[in-house]
Image 1 (cartoon, rainbow, N blue to C red):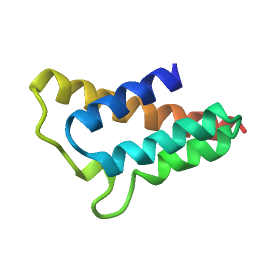
Image 2: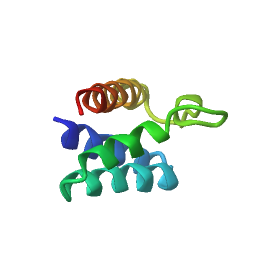
Image 3: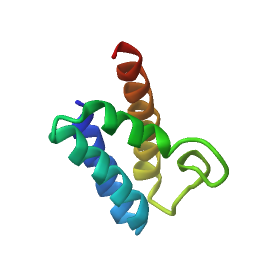
Image 4: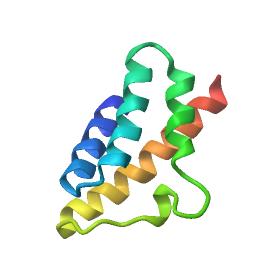
Length: 87
């Protein structure tokens, strides 16, 4: 579920030409695949918080893509936070 959500978010970020953000989440995906789950979760959570964070930025996407991106942003953050608390 986590990997699939990351992949979908990465695709939407690339569609929005937000390549820096796409690379950020691609690295989180790589960490997870490599078995570095904690590092992946911390990478994801590092995108949220502070001025100009992932929460503060919006891209011009079709409305349904924008809504899906907002959903994924929230769910991925929640998932990573919950998993870190279990470690």
